[in-house]
Length: 413
Image (tube, rainbow, N blue to C red; front, top):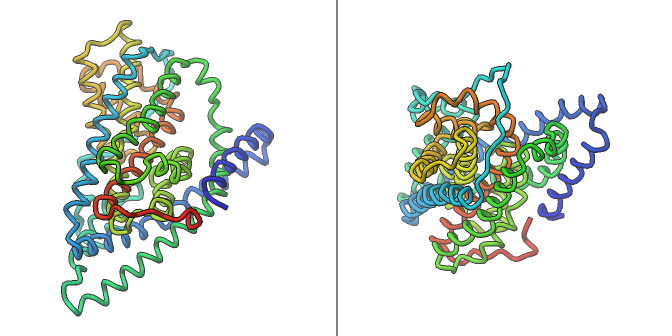
């Protein structure tokens, strides 16, 4: 059965289970045990998969002399879409200004566990290359750095190197098969994850207290997924890269997995599998673009953070911020989204607090608890758009080096 059928069914079953069994102690105990396990299984093979694919992709790109174009197109897509989506958030807020209800005072404190950027350099180089594999379990950056060096050396420009090149590429095919297996089984994983999500977060309560915010966020999803990203993909590929809505439709199971898990790393495995199998993305573009975009392609987080920051500021001031302040917030959200990947699960909290530190640090103690209260909904919307940015960006990079990447319907997952 196709993943575009099994994944929505899994979410519906998870929702039904939360309605029927929510509050039953054995059910709650079972979920609390099984969900951490399936989330770990979802990313269990990711790091070796990314290492192998990135290394094989760099070697192949050097062989075909496409290294610069794939890296540059991926980075360009990430930065441009982040900027566009961030300012789209500002435009949507201007079209429908809203405030975010701030309750207080809060008696409990929350310690934000953000990434310490003073240690960022260690992500690139450590005393031993093998230690890169265990340096971090929250970002793919250390693995990508090691794979880059191996891939550069693996270029098959000499006869003695060709057997190694062939073996690595064959092993990369094994890794892709592994991602497809995990993606198929992932429908079962999503059943448990979505059941826990629906049971944990009381969505109706959040909607009632911040209806205007969620109307704005719904418009943001429609604008990003229905208009901006498809239009940008069409423009950058000169409308020769295929139907952009078909690209979105063929990878939306990965978007669902990413959103409900709340983890971009968890969604990376199905993104890899579905981008190649359904969208015909070349492996040598896939192995570079997807890992890079998990870090740089955070336009959805920038969009949501811009809207939330403006809504909070509107509530605090009791009036619309000036255009200069709005532009500053949009630019700040775009900038800080580049570092949000290092604080997984709390990307929106990180971006908004970093923006407020820039011009109204005194308000952080007031707004932080409210963001935490809304974080489940904010995260799922932001990270779904982030996953769409990755899906389109990967297809864009692949279409540049090979325009004919059509996949027969019967071969799709």
